[in-house]
Image 1 (cartoon, rainbow, N blue to C red):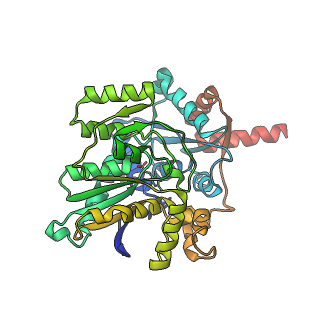
Image 2: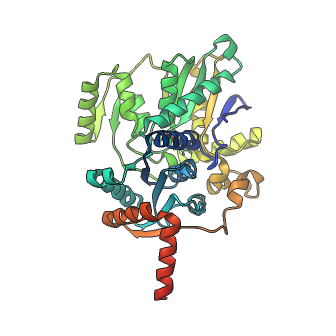
Length: 395
Ligand SMILES: *Cc1c(COP(=O)(O)O)cnc(C)c1O
């Protein structure tokens, strides 16, 4: 479901009604079912290993739960994700789902997953796969809602273009919009919104793409320096010249920077919204319209406001909402009264106090391999019961 609603001068594309209240649900709900279908046809199994800093993990878990032949192992840095984010994952007790709290950082989690995936023998023997943001099926799924959204704009019947403003981290969501445009959808402008991690706005404004330090901001799902889908954008910009893309990516890997001439005719705008602007946008939109934006959506709203005068007035202006505000109550409380009912959502309110299943591991790639091997054989229920019995015997 991707409803478009009129909010003030803009339209809001609400991709926030999935099981985890964020847009990643749209693609991962489809991906789980696709995996199930294909594995059934082939008579195979798939064991997915992933690392999350909070957001993707829960969308993946809710996409893969209940899918036959699929097991999902999600690592997260213990104590370093928001309690609500943990609960969205750890209260899923399905036998094919394993939540692993790693004593370490998100980088440790990523490294463990990477080590496991680069052990080709292990990978093959245990049918290991991934669901990360470079999986093209996720992008393909996202293309669809741009069509659905456009058809709901007032000018759709007359072919009047729409401008989309998209909060961007790994460049997946806005890349889907660009593919939709190249498929013929009348998109008259693409506004890329980022937060204080401004590598992408800097690139679109100067032509220089330069790695910096990742900063924590009010929109954590966008706290990314090197966007994993940027290479696909380069491929489009350079008309599919793979050799030139490879040269640019090599120079980026070597020097932490690459450079391209500015695309002057471009329909793209790219703007970085800082923390203060994020909070003041949430406050202003709430005051004027009664709607509460989450901090990610607020960056896109702000960016649309900044540049929408550059597009013809008859174009519809669509801001893409990527998360429900109740997922980020602390930032929203900086902008509005803390008792506002919009700060809660029924699916989140029931989580505290529910039974959780969390496995604990040290930041050690070999330990993760052992755990995955055991998990594949026993299921999460089985591993859990064995641990309980052992604890009982010793304690
Ligand atoms: C992942 C995410 C984004 C960024 O999407 P990309 O496809 O990585 O650009 C924005 N907002 C929210 C809430 C997200 O979870």
